[in-house]
Length: 223
Image 1 (cartoon, rainbow, N blue to C red):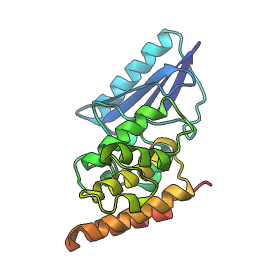
Image 2: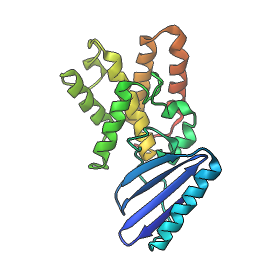
Image 3: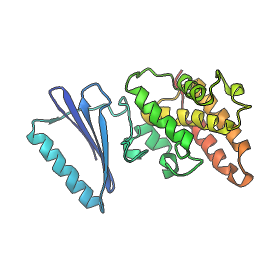
Image 4: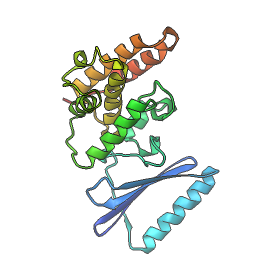
């Protein structure tokens, strides 16, 4: 279930998937706040969602059309990455739990660098909706390694160079997760970073990077 409601200058959205739902609310035109809740069963979840909807209707909210594809998606900071708080295109193209896993080291947001990058992308997106994800990834890396960065050659000699590549990968997936879009340059940089990460880890782990590479390769770009 996916519904949107408006009241004067405010909106309130709810998305239900199985035994979880996410509510997103705020002033119309803003990203707003996000809360994710989990329940013991699908039925209990739906019951609570319908209760909240009735409460909103009593307060004067009216169900309204909503362009889910143009919305900017951010996570509940208490929960972390979730399909409930991801763009529909991310849900469609990266529908394995691996792509919202915050504990799997090789997942886009499962390592410390990727998780921190996603959180910082979400913070800055609230201020700059025209954010250039690749430029911001370079800025993040610059701040972490204390040297000028314009490309991977600038961190190739850094002791923890792989963490810089994890930031680039997180940036590519964050762009899709939050906006449903991926630019040509970010896709190229993301794929190259995945390739470098594949070389940096043990042979038995390299198939994971092959899967990451293949999935990102198939996502269409926008110039």
